[in-house]
Image (cartoon, rainbow, N blue to C red; front, side, top):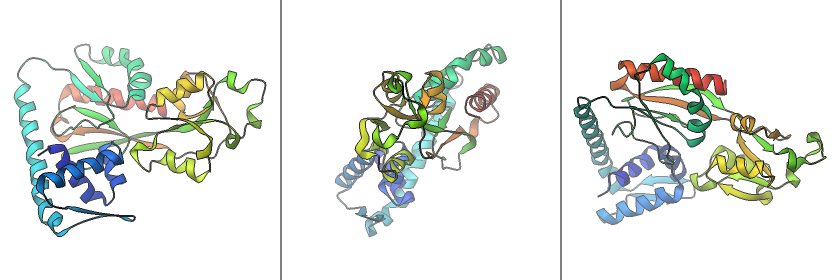
Amino acid sequence: MSELNLRTFVAIAENGTLSAAARELATSVSTVSRRLDALEADVGLQLVVRTVDGTYLTDDGEQLLPRALSSVEAGDAFWRAAAAAREGVGREPVRLSATEPMISDVLAPALPALNAASPSTVLQLSSSNEPASLARRDADMALRLVRPTGDSLIARRLPDIQLGCFCSRSFLGKRKVSTIDIAEEPMLVFDDSFGEIAEVRWLRENDLEAQTVLKSLSSRALMNAAVAGTGIAIVPRFMARSAKLVEVPAPAIPSRQVWLVLHRDLRHNREMQVVRNWVVSTVRNALG
């Protein structure tokens, strides 16, 4: 039985909808649904009832939820113990997980400041559509776009990621920015595989779905398509600035929260403190 499927069941039970569980797990609704199907097939029971208004647990699901929670916690404890055993096997890097744009456009350019503050610190940056498990020590700390849950984690909110609608100067041509009506322009937007995220709602609420010519899970792909003159992209402002894109008039787009998350066991580690302080300063300078 997959530990990941158990975690998915717990997330559905705690959040009440597949889309909310998908946001917590940083995966797609279809993946959450597939994992639930696999778990129910493994146990031979229906654990969750899905309705248009959300989900609720069956009697069997309610009965098995405490055991699922215990299994997840036991798995976390195992990985913490394994990480502790590794600490004596030479110096290991501080492992930081974040989205690709945060790594490439925000953190990597600021590495000289970290090296100056702590020349002996080795940093490992990793990106993934799936959130790294701090409990299992897949990473030591992480930048996440949703507020984390769990008593074993320490979370600090950083400046939000501001989003806007941007295009290239070549796309504008001789037109003035003030004359652009996004309802009449090709739109480059974030894919809806992760469910009802803010950008997807914004697109629908402003009747812009029919204008979409590109959907992608990659902010960099959207930005590069905009640079090439394909259309107007919804991307973070910090990325658009570096690409010298032009912001066009548009209704305000909800911002993305940014949380720096650290396992509680590591809060007094000197290298973790150095990296944490560097991340806070770097993100504030880039987004604040």
